[in-house]
Length: 142
Image 1 (cartoon, one colour):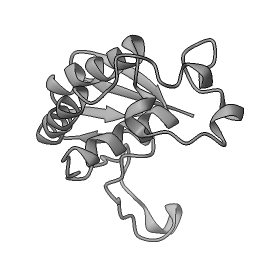
Image 2 (cartoon, helix red, strand yellow):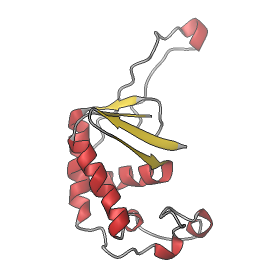
Image 3 (cartoon, one colour):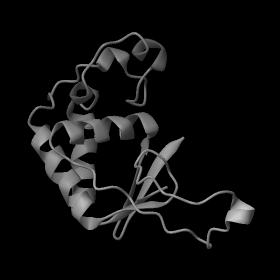
Image 4 (cartoon, one colour):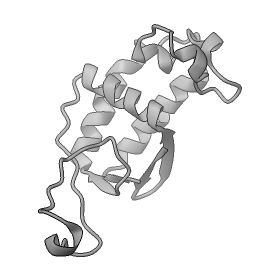
């Protein structure tokens, strides 16, 4: 499963693993999630769709939920604080696959900090790109 983000001006995507780590880093550096909103494509029909619909405000699914401009700005600020702590050398190079992601067999038993996941110039640039994406305003998660 992937997480695809659609902003007003651009789009970007992550693995669910990358996305979870980004959110964890942001929380560690002061982001307090305000919650997402979900606009249904059609009205909720309890007799057909089952039960009452209640959206949890989650960020960890790809249901088309919206992250507000204020929340995106707060995400950007928190991750900007984290950047100076992200090592320039890739501390997890031996755990990465050929595409720069994680070799899950090696990661299973590895002990690393979330910051280390984005260490090294290429991975750090992923955070920089996401910070810039958030600075553009609201986005949806697909």
